[in-house]
Amino acid sequence: MGGALISVLVLSLLVFVHEFGHFLVARAAGVRVLRFSIGFGPRLLHWKRGHTEYAVSAIPLGGYVKMAGEQHAQRSHQPWEFLSKPIGTRARIVFAGPLVNYLMALVSLWLLFVIGSPELLPVVGKVHDGTPAQAAGVLVGERVVAVDGKPVQSWEEMTAIIHRGAGQPLAFELTKDDARRTLTIMPQAKTITDPFGREHRVGLVGVSPSGEFETRRAGPVAAVGRALALHNEWIGQTFLGLWAMLTGRISLRESMTGPIGILVLTSEAARHGLAPVIYLMSLLSLSLAIFNVLPIPILDGGHLFFLAIEKLRGRAVSVNVQERAAQASLVVLVTFVLFVCMSDLERFGLINKVMKWISPN
Image (cartoon, rainbow, N blue to C red; front, side, top):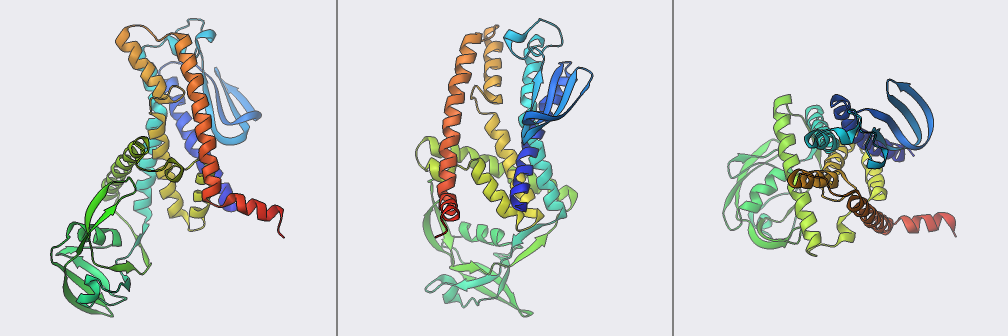
């Protein structure tokens, strides 16, 4: 129950922050915000300050911002209305939501690196038969402290060097029980297929990790660099994944996770402490930012696309075209979400769990 509550709170926070970005920039641009709601559905609490009604609603999954003159049918051609503002101002208001999600993702990851993130240690848990590591005499329990003269603090750092060293002799510095030694191992070249369906030639030595973790902290300045580097990697992987799905190289069913899957993953992360929750929250916030800038009419990216066309043409796209595009994209998105939710139910075995709960015998 606690994990499910944390899941709902994380999702609500991500969507709330997104809407708060729209709210702040709209107010700063002189656009009247008629309502800022935390949650959806019936209002539990509400109060008014200035021109804005603030509300806490019954369904705590995000929130929404309602601006004056946001729809053509609601316009009275007043200067404080959204549609009365220049294209650049409207674009800034629309883009503010994804931007704040990106900044939240970056700040939360920076915080994780500062307070300490668990990292898999380069400690050998198993030496596989017939591999270069076995031939060189690597022992279970030994910790790799350097590869090819480069110090390593995590399993990830170690494997990155090994992967690049296919067919080249590498010097491994290992320690165990205060004893230190150096072994020369030549990684065996192997072609593997990554999650995006691409083939790579990498080096492997034939060891598996022990599963030991250690909290690693970074200074405030160093944490900025680590957070930016990891975010750039995530962004690249996200677009590679989208392209791989569009080209059919990976399965949509296996690669996408919807609200149900996110709840399951967040609940699982919560069982392992605060750090995994912050890590997952950063990844989800970045994913939300990227998803919202896609040129889909009902999303922020779709609004930005229509604003770009308006800028180029010198006049707005007709209301009829925008409404039809929004309706079509809504149908597609709802269908997509239902498909992903069904995939989540199957992937995480939730249907079987529910059936067992209903019919325990």
